Image 1 (tube, helix red, strand yellow):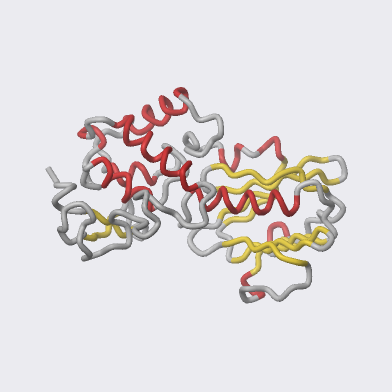
Image 2 (cartoon, one colour):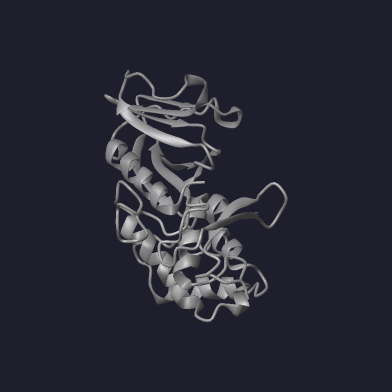
Length: 266
């Protein structure tokens, strides 16, 4: 599943390509909205909310929002109208054309069309967004309160829960735990400095928000500390990085990475 920085970059591409332009073609290739007529509507903006994308439109005087989510395999591509698609046509779930620009959403995990006033129906459950441009002490306090509400939950699992704080995926969950020196299964109640964990996640996401390649170590030649480095030596101590799978519910398990020396299980 993409991280919040990837979603923000996608929102930026869509916003730059479509905002202020009139839709000359709009296909929503999902049964529920297949007959929706958005042609002639104006794109007002595309904004990210955690891992969700909100494309706001004004169509015949009504303000609507096209809500999409990439989930595991989704992506948006922006190119010249009529250009050859990079992915198979049958995977396209949304096609938006504005003059000479075409934006195609492939393999999207969610596609919803709703009134902009009703956006909370699809994103109201989310916790504070780590990439909110207005992030501050109030957001941090809200995130901490939500995390502490389940003190026995493993830290990695809690960080991945978008209803607690939004924007962290598997990469950042692994890297933040490493930087904190905490085993990913450490219960939230045993985290000695939870504010610094959230602040670290916020800092890493902001640093990577506009980078073409994600780096959590400060060195583009060695972009991650532990994520994706199974059995490779820890960059700090040389101990082979370990992996395991965990999740709150069967079928939702994801691979976890940690250094058993730098992140001992206590």
